[in-house]
Image 1 (cartoon, chains in turn cyan, green):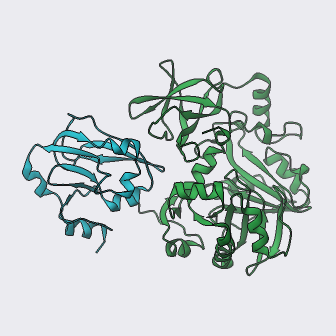
Image 2 (spheres, one colour):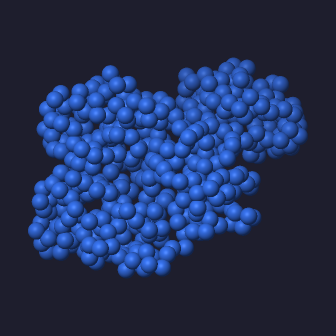
Image 3 (tube, chains in turn purple, cyan):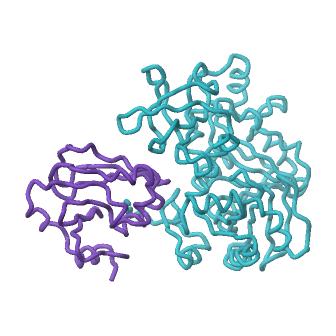
Length: 124
Length: 369
């Protein structure tokens, strides 16, 4: 499983980039299977860490996606509305979900390092 | 992504699913593949070419004896007397209130020798119910553990069958069953399925399951066969509006309400639940199982979503999902008869937002996308 070095990870399988971009991990998209719909948050929505920020629907089930840190949604990825499969094919690039303005820049440090996340999903 | 501590049962093909990279999930107490290459990919393989499913979790009961036909006609809704040797039919087993215990396929193997194929999650309950009604001149045996099952489904199924048996026998006709000595033991092969495509269900001795599975994959290679999981099995059956027991059928709903009156013979004599069904035929029903299709791009509907019409809740969905063929959300719900006419606009509540859907004729798959 691909776990990029420049990201931090929530235990619930979201990733956070230094610029506040959030998506789900390669492991998560693999577990979810074919993503067919993404319910994105409204721009301007304030979210607490661990709060449901959006919903990703696969053929099989709807899955809540949590905000990895507290903040305000400042952008959403319109491309995944029309092409939800991007979440499967490019979970770390074109398949990103939304961008947060973190309330506290240091909160990022509470998330898992790539090594810790790899250990969590049992992937080397 | 939930984990549970329940010990899941494994089919004889479990090792093959792991070897092929199938993604396993708990289903009705069984550890089954939900997908291999992907639900949508597998769905299209079955609609356009060929797919194979492990259906070993399903149950096989054998009923024998001089009184078997008469007894089965009292236990089941359809008329087994209409079956020639080697022929099968879809039928339902009801409680005294006319509610569905299980839906199943029954085949006449010999004059007084019958094979019943029942739902995996209902094996114990069905067996206990039948046993409690068993007369002295009939024997009932649960041989579910002795048999593995494979469903080979798709428009290439007939061509595949000829390749698989190598001219040993002709393919059984629709709803018929043959017994073949193939792949290390006696195997029942029925021309039926749960996908809306042509296809076969094979029931072979559990010990030869791996060999049969690999022979099917090898002989199906030239037809583009793909191993398929329960995810595609569900989207395929939902497009056909085939009911799933536990979702669309329940002890509280009758076959008349479920739109399965075709599989109920009210003329054959008495059977469990008949009085309720006859009254419904005469006086009508309050609710009917309808199919619907979402309008435009929406989240896929799921089971237990509230259904509205003109602002008032009129029911809830019992099945739902994405139709890969129609590229739209589809589902089924028991709705008041006044709201059950095709063309009726309804609304489905998905996470607090209401999305428009239209009641459609069954099966949904016949619609133009």
